[in-house]
Length: 78
Image (tube, rainbow, N blue to C red; front, top):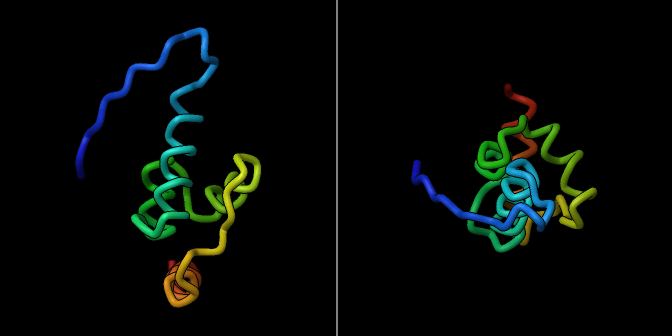
């Protein structure tokens, strides 16, 4: 796991949680992270991450349908 530190002005109103979800959602949509890894970056379970994604304007549908299908199959195994 790689740690990244980012400083955001307090006046922006962006919380650490917001930043995590935005980063995770963007990386997921770009195909850089699987759904599980993106949920981990956000600090959420897969189910909670899926629920939160829409609130932040991200689509749960992966750029690759095969990746999305594998994510769903893996989610049911847990």
